Image 1: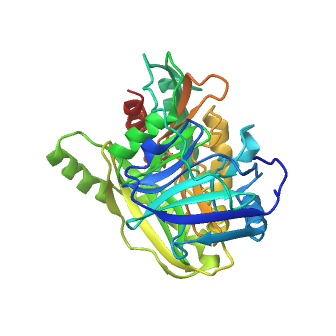
Image 2: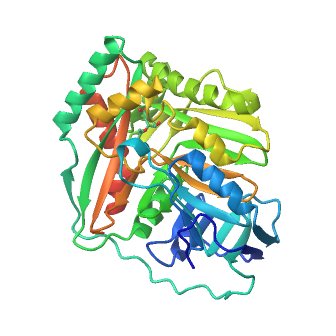
Image 3: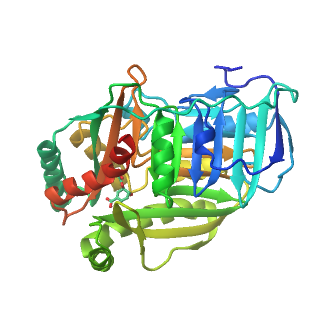
Length: 415
Ligand SMILES: C=C(O[C@@H]1C=C(C(=O)O)C=C[C@H]1O)C(=O)O
């Protein structure tokens, strides 16, 4: 059943503990299923009980709060975030500059695993529905993939970065994140489950996700809320890995000392801490970042933690944080206008929050990075995105190299 209206009839959710089903990604029955997985844990879902197309993250929170107030749930795992009535969601970066829509979906079936316990949730207009899981036809790989420039060629994008540096040097703003896109085309329809499984296997420290054709593996957690404890993983400051461990160690040390990267990082951390402060207490912002090692890049990373009151759901907190300086810039409004003018790119849901929320308001909202969006009308095409933080000391050619490094996970997954 699906509903386009704001509220469906009363909904029922039943969660039962199940035997460990093994890796989750191979259980996805079709390309339109949903996933949020990391290191063998997480949730996958399919079917559609109700869907909302909220105009903003804040509107989504309002809709969610109203919806959960009329749900009847029984669960074997009451204390486990996500193990019950829940929704997957994905939000556009900036509703003012895209025709794409944000989406929240309550799936009919969810399989989850957390802290070694596994569960099956079924949601519908009654408790009595079928327990049989659908057969899974495994995805086929993309074939003969070719690439073409998106909105800008490499040199045009370098010129946009140079223009951003000029404006920053002139004092118009402090930091702006400029993104670019790349079009990948396969001779066969692209099944995002193929990409998801490869990303989840290789990028263990990232959160791999699939929501309505948006597929990727993000290293950046905008906001996790779990029993009142809030965590945000802020990334900014990046270098490409070489494949040689000794050289990479030297690069990590250089990254941790680089004043340009530390400055870029500080803007991002400050934007998260300032946005969370009104809603949280006991905030801990570490003095210095650590280096997060991924197979393709090294990032400067800071994990901000805090305690949130029960009145703010994970979506409400995500609404307060988005867009952070890690994907927009500083000051926010000037950066938003600058990137809209210089990128020549419709970001759609790239760099927007992606994740899930449960009936208690707990949830995880990553930033949709290192991703692609499968074309709705032509599934042989997928648009890949990558962006870089630009500050006064940025060099256009190095930023282009960095953006290429950020495209590697998706390019490798496409084969
Ligand atoms: C914008 C992206 O990444 C962001 C920009 C970073 C940077 O400029 O160093 C690092 C991590 C992310 O916050 C992207 O991957 O597309």
